[in-house]
Length: 195
Image 1 (cartoon, helix red, strand yellow):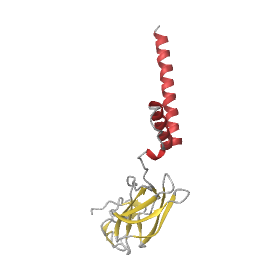
Image 2 (cartoon, helix red, strand yellow):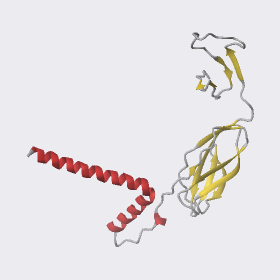
Image 3 (spheres, one colour):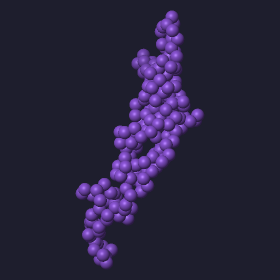
Image 4 (spheres, rainbow, N blue to C red):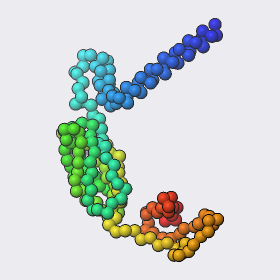
């Protein structure tokens, strides 16, 4: 008797696990469109006498996705690009929380802002989708880029110029000064700075 119960529970758990795996695969493959379509279908089945729910009545607008930018640059202008979940929308570009400009998405749902001017220092860039009715999405995930038009200062205080070491002298302490926020490597190893 006990073995039948155990077998039944194992089979039920396998079916549940199989159902969860199928659901995860469907979500990964079909994503938001599937969820939106399923919610519309469920709404229609629950209220068959109500007016048809169409895609325009769904309030959610997905934020755009920005393509990666370098962490730092010496040039005052860069190109910012990305893609949206739909075409025929406007993309609003923000730099340091101020509206920089607007552009329309292309037919392949991509967008590009050429010659974006950066401020000296760190710049946070984010974007927002706006539909024809003026409804806006949440902000995209921000990307940060530092514009530094001069080389950072680097002073090495230890070891001194021309100082030599023997094989058994390890580890060697390297010390010096640089500008705030600069990351320094020694023999391809990151250093720890004391800001």
